[in-house]
Length: 293
Image (cartoon, rainbow, N blue to C red; front, side, top):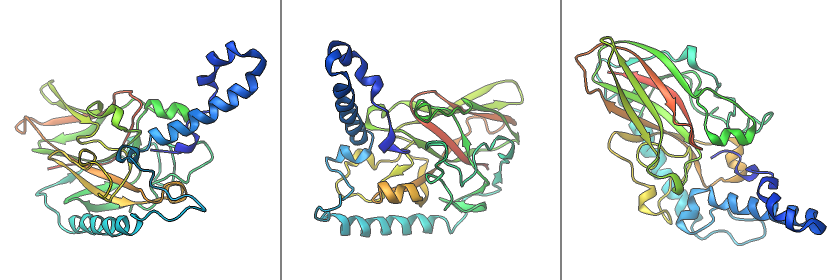
């Protein structure tokens, strides 16, 4: 998720009520606005599904689970690092996304203009192994989703015609998504369309809660329902870090990117290109690396 504590100005949700209470319009708007802001702040963070607010508040006792969470985060982060030590592919080719990169790792597409704190600056540039697969990282291909409208930003709905120009057995994506909540679990939020030289094509879906997850997510398990920890076969946590914005507002969570692998149903056919497409839900998908083997 991105900049969740500034998700709405409240007015849009209050207009109907204020029409019936014209003498107290200002009070109603402010009161309802605060209520909506707090409600959204809680609803849009995945740990509410676990029945607890994760962030300790100033002046309140520390959450007794903090030490457990810290140990579990370290265990999972170490596991992710181990997966980055071994290239599990053969004859892998990293695909150049340079012409489609529209956000630098130091940028924050999912935040208000002028605030670049919610970024991927800790992600290493260059060619590195993530979850057993080499990826060439230089920036991200940010696609449009409804949540970006809250920040008055526009991005393309798709990145069409990413050149591949080879045969391959598998496609590997290094990716993340913003604004995935329990309410859109099971929804296709993005897809990759594979175009073959013979004019045919094939679609591969990114489904919330299966192979697409919010990039702000818990690395720990305690207090998190099992359904939110499940990864479909072919998807693995590939990298984890943080950023200044997350450390300030939700330090218990981590920035997480995922490696999702799709088998090519027609490995005998030459792949001319692929499209990376947003389904234009509230979710805002982004692609950091693409590799085939």
